[in-house]
Structure formats: C-alpha cells, structure tokens
Image 1 (cartoon, rainbow, N blue to C red):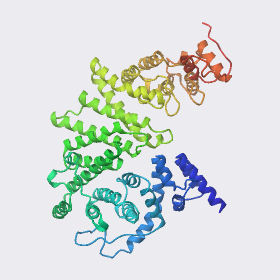
Image 2 (cartoon, helix red, strand yellow):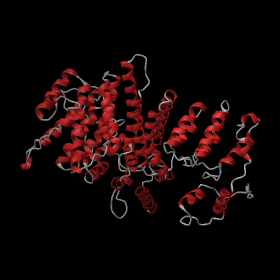
Image 3 (tube, helix red, strand yellow):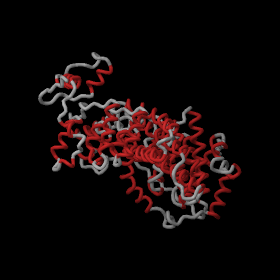
Image 4 (tube, rainbow, N blue to C red):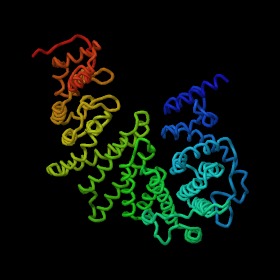
Length: 577
C-alpha cells in the first residue's frame, strides 16, 4: 500500500511538471506496459484532480496525449470484447441504412475519465485532446469516446457540439464511417429540436461565409429536413468528397462560433487535420488543384494565431501542409508552362514566409516539449534551405530579390538569436557539401542577422560545425577559407567553447591527430592548430577557470564575450604580439 501511494505521488509530480520522460521512467521501474488506468483515474495531489484534469488545466498537451495513449492501449482490448457481444448482423465492413446500429455502451471506470474532463473544459477542447483524426480506429476509440460523452453529465449544448464533431471524425474514416457520422448528426439534431422538459429548440445558425468555402448554400445541412435529404442522396450516390465537404462546413461553423465566444482564433488541430486531409484528397485523387491550394493557404495562415498553449499537433499539420503548398505551386506552374517546375520568386517568398512562421511557432514552445516537434522543425528548415539555395544558384545578381529575402529572414533570426537553438545558419554549414553554393547562403544569412556565435541544440556554434565538416571542402579549399573568414568577420571567436569545454582550436587539434595522411587535413587549418590566442581570450578563459563573478559587473558586450569562453586548460600561453 505504501509503495502504491509512493507511485501515485511520483505520477502526480511528473504530471504537474509536464515530464513525459519521468512518466516513462516510472513505467519502466514498475515493469508496466502502460501506466495502469487507476493512476489516470484517481485524484492526485491536494486539488483532487485526475492526471488528465491536471494536464489539461496546465496546458501540457504532450502529457495529455501520452496519458490518452496509455488509456487507448488498455481500452482497445476491452472494447473489442464488447463488440463481440453485438448482434451478428452488425459488422463494420458491411453497414447499410436499413439496419439500426446497436448501442455499444460499456459502463466502466475508464469512462469517468472522459466525463471528468468533459465537465472541466470546453467540449471542443475535449474532442481535440481525445481524438486523433489520423490514427484513431472508428470501431474502437471513437466509439468509446462517443459513448462516454453520451454517458456523461455534459450539458445539452455540449453534447450537441460533441455529436456534431464526432460525426465529422467518423465521416473522414472509410466509407462506412459516413453512415455512423450521419447518425451522430441525427442525434445532434434530435437534441437541438427536443422540447422535453419545456426546453426550447436550438436551431443551427449557419455560418454562410465559412460554409460557402466548402458547400453550396442550398445544399448545406442546417435542419433535420436538409440532413434527411443529404442522407438519401448519399445512399444513392456514395459521394465521399461531398460528405467530407459537409463535415468541414460543420466543423468550421463550430470553430468560428467558439472563437467568437472566447474572442480567440487559436488554431484547432482537430479541424486543421481534416482540412489538410481534404486538401490532399483534392490534389491527389480529384485533380482539384485550386481547391487544394486555397485550403493549404487557409491552414498556413493560422500560423499567425499559434500560441504556446496551442496543440503540438498543429506544428506537424503546418509542416505537412507546407509540403502540399509547395507541390501545388510547382504543379500550377507546370500546367502554365510545360516542363518548368521551378517556383517563381513571388511563390518562393510565400513558401519561405510560411516556413519561417512555423519555425517561429516552435520558438514559442517550452524547452520541455520542443523535442516533440524536432522532426517537423528540421523538415521545414531543410525545405527553406533547399529552396533558397536553388534560387541563389539562379538569381545571384538580382539585388532586389536578395534584399527581399533578407527582409523575410531578419525577424526569424532576431527571434532565434534570443532563443539560441539550431538555426538555418547551422543547417547551411551542416549540409554544405558544395563550397561554391554554401558561401552565398552563409553570407545571406549573416547579412540577414544570423548570430555567428549562436549555439545549436547540441551546444555547437557555426564555427565548431565548420571545423567538423571540413572534409566536405577537400575539393574546394578556397570556399572553405572564404566561409571561415566570413564567420570570423561576423564575430566568431576561436576561443568560444561548447558545453563539453572544447573550442574550435581544440577540435581541430584532435582532428589532425586522427588523420593518417596530412592530405586529409585541410591545408588552411594547419597554421591554426597551434595558434596563440589573443590576450583578451586568455583573460576571459582565466575568469572562467577561476570562477570569478563577472555577470552584472562588466559592460554587456564584455559580459557576452567572457561567457562565450571556456575555462582555461593547461598552461596559459599569452600572445603579446
């Protein structure tokens, strides 16, 4: 019992700190495949909140997703058993409108988790937290969440919204999911027009501006009559794209209304995911290039509204949509001029601006959750780097375009310099396999405001990365010298250290000692290996070695200079020349 209490305290502490790493350690120490449901459902700490409630209140999206994943892992098998008890005529592979779907209701303690958060936060957030449109199975998790909401004490209005959004989720599943989605909308309509207990009807207020983006006004589902008409037409035509356009209109209406009520336009990942999937379908299967392009732009404009409390899923959606936008713009030019796939400069700027907006979104995240989106961040950086590199190769002698690129890049570099993690400048050096290409882009980034002394996620500066990447310049030593000099001129310091205590010079020394043949070591670096540091660098290293307090005691520039140096190792050699 004492052990169980201790574990509960540990879970509570990890949840309050938003630490998935600690939750994984707890699971590993206790040999659990998944954290037992009771630790998710039991009240934690003095406030008496469950782990999910606490994570939701603190805006720890990554912990919420982790805990929901633990629930899914354990609920799926139990839910499968409940489906086995359903009458034999029901199968998810052979649904039709002539059969009534039996209720799949399993009253269990797990449902209380859903009920708890349904009573604590807006229902649209409940759905965003619990539903992953990309991977959740309709006959398992979606049905579980739907039945949990039915069993909850959520208000009539919340249940209407929940039914409508769950209907959207089902419609975007395989064809038979549309049938279940329509049932959800029918349940929502029944609640809207119910007059039981002297209730008043809550008719739909169509958002015509939003709906017109997807559905003709005359075909919009806005009443029981229009819903039954759609249902009959869908049975005859099985037009999946039309069903999905209706779903997007429903979702957009709810998002807009909630945004007006809360006076916020924060991106809603549940809706954005379905928008993106619809746009990809239009591009790949329906040959509707303009529709796909417009939706991609609509999604990416939401990067302006991203906040630190927004769902981390938005970063992935933005990054995948950027890929789609790029494909659409290339395809558009290909249709206009056969055989030409290069972007126009105007379109390149559009893609780069949205890409940089995504990177700025990542900077809003706390260091704890930032690794969660590392993959998408680097995908976007790589895309921007490649596009600019290609453009510089074609248009180096266009000062006006170069200046526009600098103006576009400057806000990103200013923000990155403050956050101090991997930037486009670091990436350019890492991927600099062609010396003739790397120099122009390095100069562009430096002139746009990139910090030449900034450290990446591994604590390395551009100069450290250049020293480690010197093999790529064996065939073009002149470019290496030019890049090296450009970094020095921009403010790099040979004595700047990385967290391991190594400086650029010590890395070079170690590299040379490993070289079997002198030809493998860059001739330009030979004289630098035993270079004597300037007196200023030696003084800075002595200050760090003696642990002399300097913060707040030196002018800002000198303070920054000293902080970039490691402690002095070995004998102190002073260059008096």
